[in-house]
Amino acid sequence: MSYKVYLADPFIDEEEINLVSATLKSGWISQGPKTLEFEKKVANICGTDYAVAMCNGTATLHSALLAVGVNSQNNVICPSLSYISTSNAILYCGAKPNFVDIDPNSFNICPDCTEAAIDKNTKAIILVDLKGQPANYDRFAEISNKYNIPLVADSAQSFAASYNNSKIGSQALLHSFSMFANKNITSGEGGVITTNDYEIYQKLKYIRNQGQQGERYVHQELGYNYRYNDVLASIALSQLRRINMILAKKQKIANSYDIAFKQIQSLKIPFIDPKVTQHSWYHYTLSFTSKRLRDRVRTTLENGGIETRVAFPPIHLQPMFNHSFKNLTLPNTLIAFETMLDIPCHAKMTENDINLIIKLIKSSII
Ligand SMILES: *Cc1c(COP(=O)(O)O)cnc(C)c1O
Image (cartoon, rainbow, N blue to C red; front, side):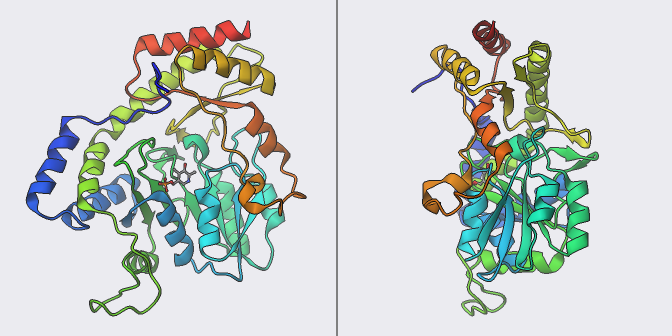
């Protein structure tokens, strides 16, 4: 289906094309100097000592869990309201996902539910910055210290967001970002991890390169081919140069939506935790008082050529788990799944697009 306004639309222009062309002509197209340059820039933007780029944001999450020692004896706490990567990364380690509910306001993983779910086999906690809103890092830092369990952030959706006036990337022990096509910065596919821990940084580099630690073709442990490449790194580098522009445009659209919708009783505009000093606006998400209303608004938008998306189906109910979590009740996750709606919020939208979306939503509510 083709839309008038897509939910996400990558901002690619001559700069990306020229950089890719230069890299192709340089003769070095696998992981090399451009990847290193990208990693340095990401670490610089995120305010961390290290960054390690990989082939996608699921590989980075898997590697992050391996780096903190997750194995088949463990469980890892994570929200059920996330993309499947979050729990797949846990399963790749042979560990069990320990699903917990979300906070009904922020839609992010609930700290109290997490504390209640910790047991002696809990090896890590994955926080997801859902829709681009940073999770409750201050509360989770307390939990992490109290139980001595590391925090791994699935920040795939929150690149360039800020928490307590610091860029996302250093709040958890590791942050995993994605450069998939619909993310705030993209190279089609790609992922990058930020951390301040030197030992973890070294481990990540081994894991990415087949477990090779020093001498070439000598492999100390099981690793993977999770390498990035310089062609994609060239695209990602250009994207980094325009991240402030992308973020400013998204913020402006979010402000227009907030103003247009905040008085409407039957829907809620995104709640923002006061500690979140910059949302990344990966998605702008409305939530409605009923599923019926949400579905009606969605149909109106789709018929008007506007792409929308409902929340990810709760992971614990995915067919792959074959009902093994059927006794798990996560009420806020279910409500969010039935009442949330993502509407377009990206840097290529025009004033007309925004006005059309506002008009269509208002017309289907009143
Ligand atoms: C995009 C995304 C990922 C990573 O996806 P890849 O396509 O593997 O880069 C992980 N978690 C969440 C929540 C995401 O949105």
